[in-house]
Image (cartoon, rainbow, N blue to C red):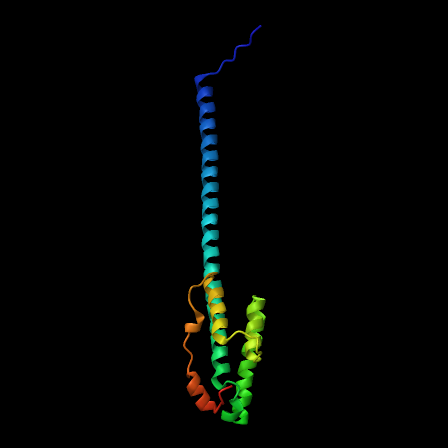
Length: 172
């Protein structure tokens, strides 16, 4: 015998209402979940961009240290004893040592670090200062094929004036 299911209009309305409420709650939960995931995704993206910006700023500050280091180092071109008294000489060497040690701690590129240290040790095979600055430029700007010729960087004094100041012979 077949069973007949009977439902009153009240039961039908109650069942429909419960189903509608249940679907509304599920829709609300899904909408909130999607909203939270979207907000987290956007926050993550902005946090990453902010971190990249901070890192690039730090790199630029460190590159400034390289420029200061070379500017101080080439100031006397190995003739600091002729121009500085003993106390000034100690302070000069202390500054150069501090910068040299800092550079050796943060420069990741081994070739660049070796070039900097070779140059300041007056190694004959070392790249010149301008070429090294060009390498730093590529590192900071993240340009693999930089068209800027680092030999166009202007340094003072001129070679002739340097020879006069330091009384160097032509081999200087």
